[in-house]
Amino acid sequence: MAQGLEPPPSAERRAHTIAVASGKGGVGKTLVSVNLAIALAARGHRVILFDLDMGLANADIVLGIETGATLADVLGGRRSLEEVTVAAPGDIAFVPGSSGVAGMANLSEFERYQLLSVLHRVETGYDVVMLDCGAGISRNVIELAAAADTLLIVATPEPTAITDAYATIKAFVLERHESRHASTAAAGSIGVVVNLAENRHEGKQVYERLAGVAARFLHVPVTDYGYILRDDHVPAAVRARTPLVVKYPRASASACMLASAARLSAELGQPQAGE
Image 1 (cartoon, rainbow, N blue to C red):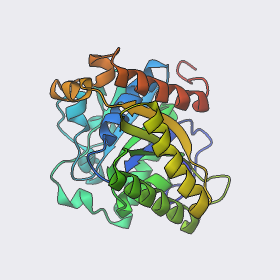
Image 2: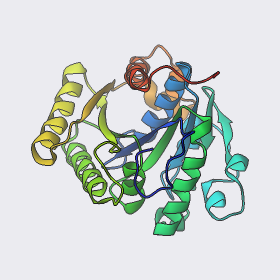
Image 3: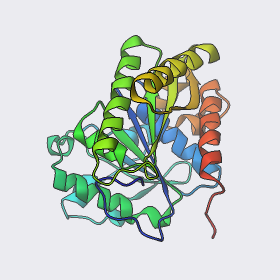
């Protein structure tokens, strides 16, 4: 986890934290979070997924699991993190968020600090901590993203989605620069996954547009983590409440998810599981 508003790093820290965010809702952010987490686990990484879409959590639906206690119970001191963590499809651990709880959508600075402390405590037990953040540029999203090692922005070819994705990148960069603890060495990287692309050319075009404006106006590099083709298997998997890569592993969108996971895995290095 890159330095920001969080406890000092431990010498035992092992996990790489990936915050998945989007400029607007409806672009497939949770779909990407869930399936990338499973795809990384399939490559041998120990993965825990947090549903941090505060107040509107729905990763449990995409995973097809029933949950009881949530992260809200942890922050409220009613449950421990271990008590709310559940096993999910694809051999990942999952921490459910809260849906319909207004207070979770507007955490105080102290509550965000509590949340970052919770995330910090799990780092020694996993290789990857995946954060399914909310859409937009609320303080919840931006401070969590700024504390991650990698910010992964999900965008689509829709013009408004591209504009909002850039706005999210800009807010992240500003937060990182304003952080009291930010440094070039500790700064998290930024990447893009383009969802609902009609073909490879369109996916590449959207990425290049975002990377170009980020380089020109923000002076930051943006990594290409691939594209996900528009595929009728995606809504079918959601209706079946089964992750795409589990339900339809040979679908074109699943192949794209696996390719994106391979790129991330190559950067993470060899899984530490079994050490």
